[in-house]
Amino acid sequence: MRKVVASTFLSLDGVMQAPGGPDEDPTGGFKHGGWTVNYWDEMMGAALDNVFGEPFDLLLGRKTYEIFAAHWPYIGEDHPIGKRFNSVTKYVATSSTEPLNWQNSVALKGGAAVAVKTLKQGDGPMLLLQGSGDLIQTLLSSDLIDEFTLWTFPLVLGRGKRLFGKGAMPVALKLTDSKVSTTGVTISSYVRDGEIVTGSFALEPPTSAELERREKMEREE
Image (cartoon, rainbow, N blue to C red; front, side, top):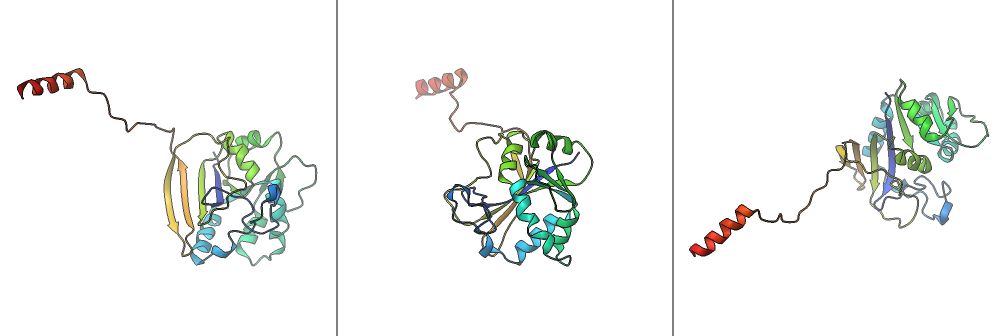
């Protein structure tokens, strides 16, 4: 059984759109592309190395795939992340008939949710989601994401595509790791922790025995 892990950059108000550059994804009039660039430090680089240090295949939407395919094949084999990304299998959710020219790329067939559910049932390394906001919404609405590593940056963007949209399924999560960079970025890892358990802070009405006890005390006074 394979697990799906979403490693996602977020603003404090939950926006994940265009973290890497001004032209990455300007849809909807988004004007703050590249909002993560000035926050990186050595600790964040080490944390990213840990994410990519485990065996994985990439799970990408078509837009993120095209951004990656225009960059990582040309970065050089001496770059550790580029080397990993070039060698692993890239599973791509796409409705386009345009070929996937990046080596080891596979188009998901029969709808993203069905295809990912089938992949999860097979053998292999974890399926690592990078970016791919539309694909994430599809998988959230089908309850197919097992773990989250959320990189929360200390800024508010106000508008843009958010990680947890209207289709997200209610689920409890358990924090398994958390660290903070020198620039204030919080990196938190969560795993599934069953159903949401609700409760109430409202005072419980007194039982009949309690009412009798109170009446007795009042009479004795």
